[in-house]
Amino acid sequence: MYTAVESANKHIWKALLKPTGHLNARPESYSHGSVQEMQIVLKYSLDAWIETPGALDLIRAKVEG
Image (cartoon, rainbow, N blue to C red; front, top):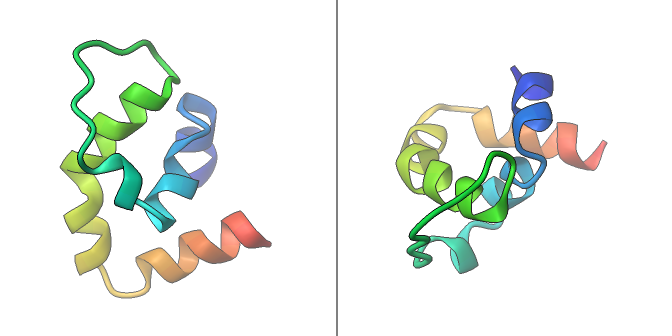
């Protein structure tokens, strides 16, 4: 899953670990792989990542390691 998401949009994993600046964005349009696409995906999925025990730690290890 990590590799598939990374291939689809390289911005998602780093933003997932530091989402603050992206959560208030309101993109009107986006293209595949863009920062704007990541902002929309992040808004809809962040709570699920936070609620899943160990998920953010796993992503942090992949991003930093």
